[in-house]
Image 1 (spheres, rainbow, N blue to C red):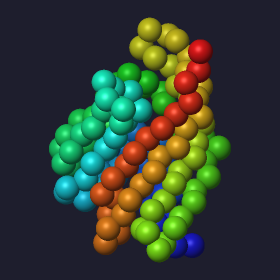
Image 2: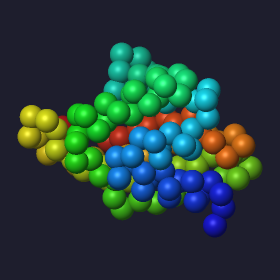
Image 3: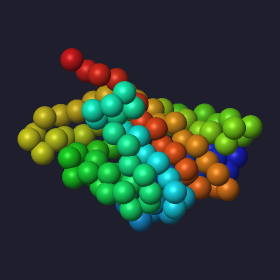
Image 4: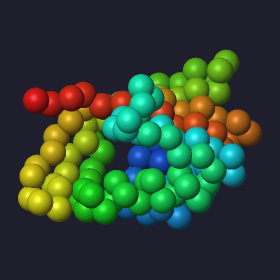
Length: 124
């Protein structure tokens, strides 16, 4: 198992534990997070560790029981890239149940995440 694959597994576990400290231990200081929703073609972007942490915290606030299941991880060690594919389930604060498939594209440098770019299916 590669270090990136292990990091992807640990990140998924930390997300399912809703453990921001554990999640952020994998991120570099100058990291970037791009979320699917936003006012731009890339969704919304957060830069820097504190801003990324705040953006990720909103996921747990909006979906308190969020869970990433049926995970698959793919790694390209030549480009220090990892992809995690998952099925997200959770319940919004208004009681609406969510189930959506998606993936995260991660870029690593010296063992830390420098970019997390998230995508998910649009369910209508």
